[in-house]
Length: 163
Image 1 (cartoon, rainbow, N blue to C red):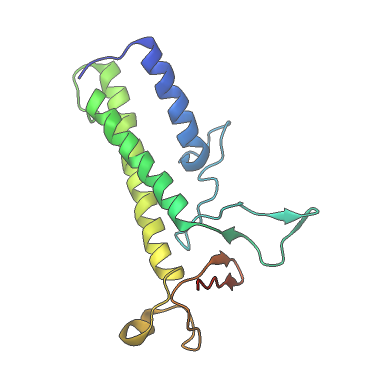
Image 2 (image 1 turned 90 degrees about the horizontal axis):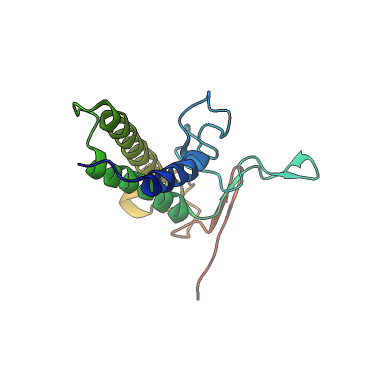
């Protein structure tokens, strides 16, 4: 483990700012909202947060256009935390400066892992429609025949058929 130079520290701060923009765990942060688009109840992320049209909420509510975008962004956060841990350790070093960086790295990795896991579970539940023996686990009625949802809104879903 080593202490990177100032340019690396500046890049680190830049990337951590990008992470805080979408996965900030602190409600006390004055620069970024806590978990900008994450719905902890459903486990998924809303693409547009709380969308409005002319100042009023959309009739269909919030939407999720791509579960893979959310999954990949959260997995990238976990991987970045892992790389940070490789550089600074896991927060158990004797050097207090390395220890602080290591604790931050571990928090970033663990938050990315949690966000990824909940997003994957949500995608499996709401985007992949179960049929046959698995139909009892589905959130969709049996009459709903497509295998996947094209775009999910808070109050409805769109089906995309590929021919």
